[in-house]
Length: 350
Image (tube, rainbow, N blue to C red; front, side, top):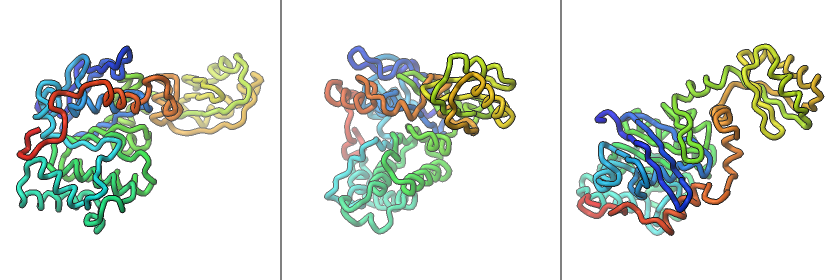
């Protein structure tokens, strides 16, 4: 386990009758960027909170930096940095004051604090704004400051829970650059939860896909996309007779056909060669085709193949406890955190 930064064994978390996380097994190597991909309500944030010792597992075990998250929470916290979805920043402080306070809470001496603030500011680009009050910061700058605060004690493992949600494209690209720098320059292990397909595809060495609290697939982004097939033909249809599916499946080179609402996803080894036959098959079956496009597979196609629904479409799902926001609210309002959970106190002891 020495070469593994994060390990879980059948870890699960229950809220009432609802299993937000239902038996997840992970093995994440030191220095790896692991992308945890899933829609809102899939269980991403709940799993992060268990690994960060903010929630106790209802079942199973988790180990972070070699320490049991339930039995050794104080040792786990000293080895991790955490940037959750909502940045916990005091708007009345300057950025530098906040970083210095965070370093004090970890028990760092003044000379070490000054050095660490300078070091994290070379990784996280805040510029001269570091000496302005945080209430003058943009959303992107607050995200970067939160990332800097998570790094101030030089953690082995960094948890980033949807770090770019709500950011403009320029700010999102800046966060991506900083995440890559942490891995390349410092060898930091990064556990990144996201609902953005391109973020997982761009940053992660490996991706785990979670749906309804269960890990449904895991692998490199390229390997996962290869499981779908070489090409995807997307047909938008107004009318789709039942005979159309059989007609398309009979086309030479077609490997799989998935229908969801008014969209038909046709997986083919050679999409360019199959385009015309697929169009003819749809027309001959009486289908009314609004558009027909060809593209290479995405991680959303993997999710669609595994679950029968699109990742983006499921983001709107807010039924019952099926949102991470609801999970978090349950955790805050009704469930006790792990023993000793909280901000580390001076002296480096939680």
